[in-house]
Length: 146
Image (cartoon, rainbow, N blue to C red; front, side, top):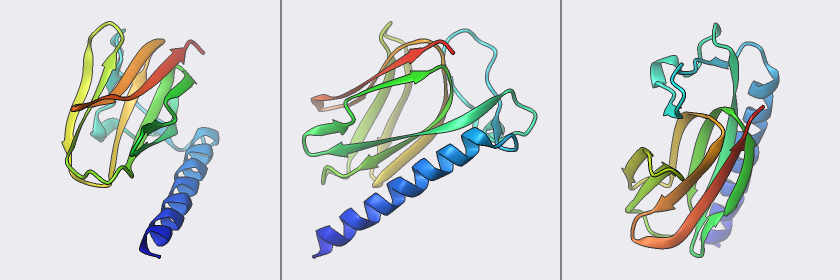
């Protein structure tokens, strides 16, 4: 019964995050400042939602289940994204990596919460979201130009 409640809450939360992402993608009022560097960089938190920026923020929800990431592959167009990683695997002490396929590490996060979120400006290329100590748990994110 308790797991059913968590599953329902997770579905509702996922729906709300996706709806929020859709609304902000259509709204001219929710903007994100993007770094000028050619490589992908995290969007600084202080600049994450400025009205004067030139790109909309889009939501990307990824879950970690006992078998790995869902979805395990994602295709996006370049731009600013708010990553929401929901930990549903039953292990609370995880370390996440977001790397480019070139080997550049964008972020390493050691987290014990059931949800991790961070804004990123993704340029064209391939990225891999992974979990330390679970080499098969990978989400490949392919970013294409707009």
